[in-house]
Length: 433
Figure 1 (cartoon, rainbow, N blue to C red):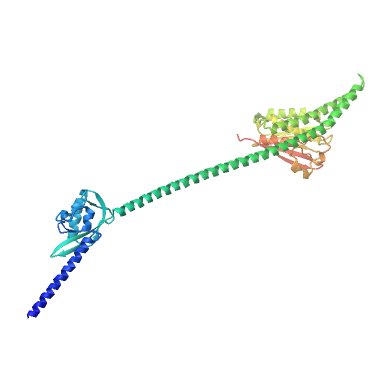
Figure 2: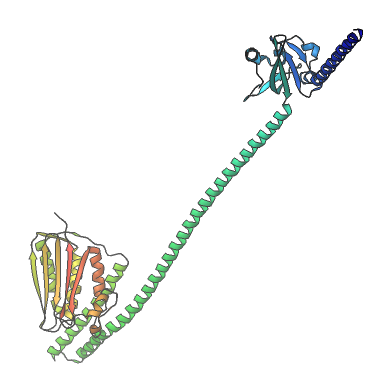
């Protein structure tokens, strides 16, 4: 029995020794852990405080024992913390505090520092105790702040680069637009230069044709004038009166022909330079008809022997809208051609029709006509039909007529066949009244 008692005492001693050893190990783990550990009771009083917590907060264990844990928290957070603490004691469960928000602790020297806190609990003799594991995350926060600043700086640089790119793109777009505009101006200048060169070439050709035509067309009438004047000088007063009259008529006709040539060139020059003004106005039908008849009578001296001009008219309206002077020039040109290209003893028919909304003027002759192959070119400058080469003319008459018609908004139709004569029909729309 004595032996058994000794053995029991030895077992008890060993158990106490093992327990002490375990307690020493837990005490070493508690005190030398590299994380702050704060243990509180149900009232929030601190009952344990490890060495790492002492280094974190600047308090010794004796300074905090029995005091409320709120002493380790900034004053402005005490109210919220007490509510959270009470809630945890009633429903204890392991958790991390401050999820989604920053937590701050308070040192003895009143300096705040950011922390990360995890909570756990244990029960001893029916009482619940809370274990707070506190990590000072100042360095991490500084790093995060540096990262955030670098991120902000990077975002700013990125935004600056984006703005710079946008500005550069805008400048590129602006320069592109300017370049396109410049190219367009250059292209326009090139076209204008080409047009100017074409116009210069046309003008040069026109001058050449003018000199050639004038030289050719003036030679015959000038020779006629010189020869007739010479012969008139040979006659004695009272002699050969009939011959004198014929020479005087020849001189007048030659001068008239040269006058017509000069008028063609002058009219063309004004039309080409845009100096020919149009003056369309309402003219009484009777006055207009008298004006046309007067024009025809003024041309009778140009008629060849036996030629005559007949005027036909059908005036269904009391007035006509036109430029009388310009229309007279057109009529004179058409009748001159009809006289020139028709044989002696032929009739030139002029018809004037004034109907609602339209005014028609037609000149018909029984002359040499116009070959079909030449008709598409009739309105070209200096063009002359193949069968008119031996007949005096500048090749400008119909070209000038076309210019006049453009100013009067008129149209012209031609019916002609070689050897059968020609009919030129002009039409002008009249305003609705």
